[in-house]
Length: 564
Image (tube, helix red, strand yellow):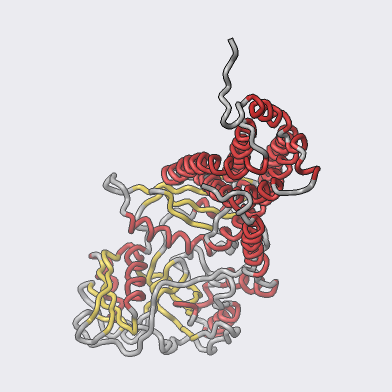
């Protein structure tokens, strides 16, 4: 039961709502580095969306672990495009790649198997990310391993010297690369396959290495210039684990497809986490030959031109069973094992859908959505003003405040959880206009029912609200439940529709309780003749009916008896 109009304090409700709005917009304008606008989907700003369907060899449902690992590998490849705002998400057994803007053509080929291979390290050099790395020594002879390099040996051998984490690479593509850095990146792209890097001519080799190393920027704040498929029969210049080292590598001598299994474990004898690696038959032979000839030299494990680990070979490893040691944490050991095990995607994918939307078409779609929403609001405004008059003005004000809440929440969700507003989401917002307006209609019609019973507008407000709020709650609960079920069961863009519909339904309750009802209560207690005039409130006809009914009722204590 709502408090009587005389006991309700509308100012407190309105002040609390104002506090919510101020807090939201303070977060919008004073937190985050993005613009104070919602994050738009590719159908509104243009871009490319590719849906990759996983295929399990046995025909069953793909394991969730394999899907997540495939998504992680594909995400590293997508980030290498260098476009901000890219997303890779799981949708059931599908991997959905979204690349905004006009640079998404490469996304259509990202579902192919990632390349994992083994290369011999010619030379390596530690890198301080915040500084421009200097050129390597002029000689082309292999340098000593960086202090952070782990060791690789057969399991029975002694622990490796040195150590350091060698987990999966952590790239953070930058969005504000200056022109000079872009030129360096392009130069690095051109130089990474330069055959002169391993020329027998020492002077030519040294010059090529120096130029390539100078162009290579391993600063994590700059987009990695080396992400992409490399030619296995050519040398490679690449950044190392966590961008702490850079490497000059020989052509690939062993493909990652020769790995049969990889796992992490804890070596209790030496009190350290290790990665155990097993090769297939031919891979075991190649690995044994290589390690026999390159003891105390480095072998780089390269995933899509990123060195995920470069351990030092401690001894010849025959039989295919290899143990990678170093100062690993449990997480780092597992990450490296997963990269080695799933470097070549654990599942095969086929492109089931590839959609490219031009920026012009996206802008036209956004304009169409705004026009549709504007027309919907205009029709609601006209209806409310015609039918409810001053109460209709309160409806318009409540709708405007509701929109202010929705807008701020959309901006913040885009920053916090990466939510993107697409055409389906715009459709959900437009339909939510009707749901919000319906709450006002329910309330005002309850007021009319009370006034028809002969009550004044002031006394009708608390009674009408007490009855109306139950109906409003039930109506919004049904709408929210339908949106939640649709979001849970739906796939693709339908989720956007369900999300905005459910969110707007919740915000509708906030506005009705904190704005609409307090404003109506304030009007009902107003001493202004203009506001108290029933005709100005659209209540003239129902008040006349109420007056007639009240006059027709018998006075208290007098039976209404007809004379014969």
